[in-house]
View 1 (cartoon, rainbow, N blue to C red):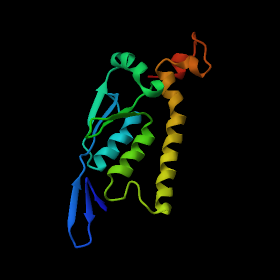
View 2 (view 1 turned 90 degrees about the horizontal axis):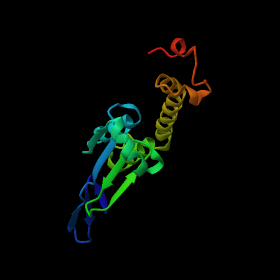
View 3 (view 1 turned 135 degrees about the horizontal axis):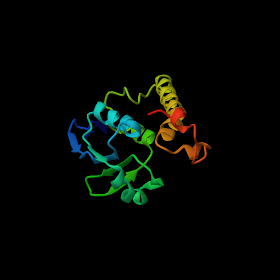
Length: 163
């Protein structure tokens, strides 16, 4: 059997070829109307030519959705298979890797060569490190300064956190 895109070719002994076409799953990616954590997943889907619904929600909708999500966080990827079964995933890096492994017919996003893949994994790790280093500045600017040890009434806040 040989997988080519969404088709599986089966070669039989007397040069008879049978083709089984597998329907692509329906993918819905849910996140806020910003790039941030979901953007790497959107880019992987676009780069692989994979159709998906880009569902952008506002912060009011998030309040109602949050208790229904794995780990209480976004982005959220819902995959609906041809048989109607669905699976919901969290964690954007896991989603990005899944898209690359499942849909990248060129083997450029997830190459089989371990040396090339190591370079890609290194960049993914560096990107995660930079996002973690930048996150406190983002959250302090959003008024979550108490999460970083500052008192609720912080006289220096306006000077430290400039919008």
